[in-house]
Amino acid sequence: MTIKIAIDGPAGAGKSTVAKKLANLLNFTYIDTGAMYRAITYKVIKEGIDLKEEDKIAEIAKNSSITLEGEKIFLDGKDVSYEIRRPEVSEKVSYVSKIKKVREILVEKQRAIAEGKNVVMDGRDIATVVLPDAQFKFFLTASLAERAKRRYNELKSKNLQIDYLKVLEDIKNRDKMDSQRKESPLKHTDESIVIDTTYLSEQQVLDKLYNIVKEGL
Ligand code: C5P
Image (tube, rainbow, N blue to C red):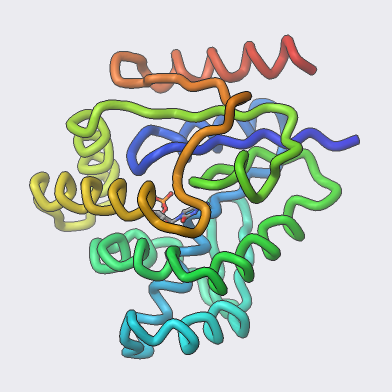
């Protein structure tokens, strides 16, 4: 039997950092599903496709090769790990991720990647849709201001030019779109362990998750 750990939550709640470290500690595969939606969005922008052209966008999702290697993401064989974090991708990704067909295609890819492996997968719909049988379901959240601050610091550390208020606005918009969309909106399940990380350090969150998993294994 393989172990699946689902980590969901809004933008900037610290999911990916903690998910990566947890996967390392447990020697599990880390799967960043947000990076997959970002990669498709990056291609949509690059090819100049209008966000209203949902069928064309779904075609792109269907015909693109997306591979994850540790923290890196490859789109059609090219490393796009840096490009997908750009603000223009963040601004548009929620328009792409609300398209039903795009979600169906990416969910299928995500399940295929997780098949037969022990994984830590992070996203918005992992416990609800992608891996409903996951043995561990976490939902990380934090105040809007704290999440914007974290995302701002993260982008700055990656040398991306960005304004704090713009980050705050982007996170607010994405939260709204991701939570209110018809297809697989961001929410937790009844079994999810909800953790408010506003006043917790990264290490404290990691310890919490690690201890819960270790006890439950
Ligand atoms: O996790 P990250 O902030 O990189 O995700 C980018 C966007 O991808 C989210 O704002 C959301 O619109 C979409 N997403 C999603 N479902 C997932 C993961 C991400 O809709 N499982």
